[in-house]
Image (cartoon, rainbow, N blue to C red):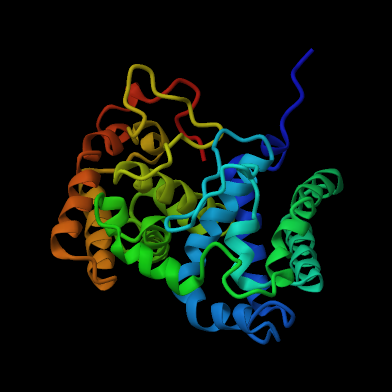
Length: 325
């Protein structure tokens, strides 16, 4: 008798979850109760002034939380700069939301947008109920900030968090701004690649062209998550990269090796160089210091032989995986 699939698997793994989170996050900004026009000044300020640069990181955090909450292989950790409470459940959302002073009605508005996003993404009713149950279980913790009247009762404020992040420079991960800084770079980088003449919608490589034209709409959010996770790990962050659901694990290889996920695309060395060029441009546009730009390019450049393996020696691609979309 086959083992029952986890909710994570039934949702389509990290790619299915990231697709839902992307839709949900974008729609929350448009919601009049909790978005740009919210009467909650904290939510309105975040939506108007911070979302442009921090929404990609929030999407990453939300995806990571949902992967963990639905039985996936990754464990949720609070973002860089957030204090931790060892007495709280790992999945508790109290501390990240405390300064936003979210009310019960505002939480319900967010839950409503999650319900609509699950419907839009074609998630079956049974799985929708399970996801909403996991989210609604956090309601009392999320709204606790709105019930704290005394000044300073939240363990941190948003300005304090931002200042603490800027002061952390020990690792490349920290110098890049943690997962929020990395996710923003990945957001711009990933969107730019779709329009690149060498590797995007007009690529001469039919595998890259087909993915960009026919699969990116639903799978790009998941790819952004995977790219962010990989870069967090590769730059000394607190998360460990794992290949996405359905990608064969490497045998006798380092876990950061990108050979298997890229094998079906038969990426050439010229195409790899085009991708590296876009990454360099985006890092510079994000005003990453020159030394750190080079450090990121060095880490990425070490994967060149692995990423181009499908083009150079397709016989080394995993059996039954070549041509996987």
